[in-house]
Length: 269
Image 1 (cartoon, rainbow, N blue to C red):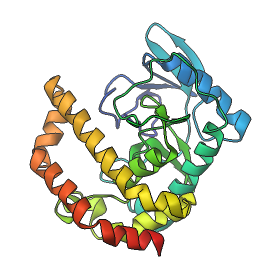
Image 2 (image 1 turned 45 degrees about the horizontal axis):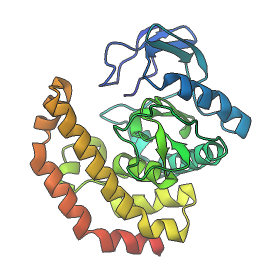
Image 3 (image 1 turned 180 degrees about the vertical axis):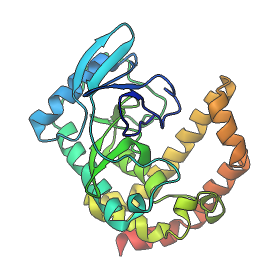
Image 4 (image 1 turned 90 degrees about the vertical axis):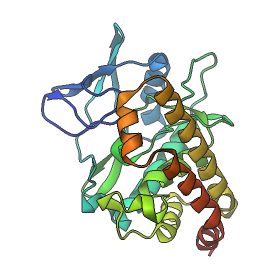
C-alpha cells in the first residue's frame, strides 16, 4: 500500500500494488482505484484549505493514475531508528491534525463508491486517510511532512485515523508480538500512545474513547485479513503465517482489553 523514495523505476515497499507502481521523473504512475477521480478532486482541494502534505493529481486514464512524486524519507521495515523516535511520533500526530483540519472543510461527494476495506464502520462527515501506517508517511528533516497512498480513503471520524496510526506507530501490539519486529523492541506503548495524542492535540473527550476506536480498528483489520486469505492473497497469507496466524490476533485483542485501564490513565493524566 505504500512506496519507498527511489530513483526512476519501480517503487518498492507495497503489498497490494507490488510491482505496479513506478516513478517517472517528478511523477508516480500507479493503479487507480474505482474512486480515484473523487480522490483526485479531494487532493486538489486540500491546498485550498491549507494542507500541502499530499501528492497532487496529474492524470487518470486506462485504469492508472499519475500523481506528483513527494520527495522525502519513507520508512520501511525494519524501520530505521529515526522513524521510531518520540519526536517523529509527535510530528505524525501533528500531521494528522493538519490533514483533518483541511479535510473537514471539504464537503464529501455524494454517490462515490468509497472503498470499505479499512473504512470507519460508523462512517463520518469528512474523508479520512484510513491507512496512516508507517509506510504511508513521508518525512523531511526528521518530521512527518506528507501522507501518501490515499487508496483506502473513505468517510469516517477523525479518531479513526488516529487509532489507525496508533496501531502501527505506537505500536498497539502485545509484547510477544512486538518482539517479532526489531524496530519495536524497547518501545513503551503506553507512553507513546500519550505522545501521539499530545502531538495531535486530542481533546479529553476523544482520549476517553480512543481505546474503543482502536478496538474497532483491530476488528476491521482482522476482517480485512480474513477476506484477503479467503480470496487467496498469497502475500498476506505468507505474512499471516509468519507472524503466528489467528493466535496472534487473539492474543493482541486480549491484551488490549487487559491493558485498557493503564492506557486510559496515561491518556488522561
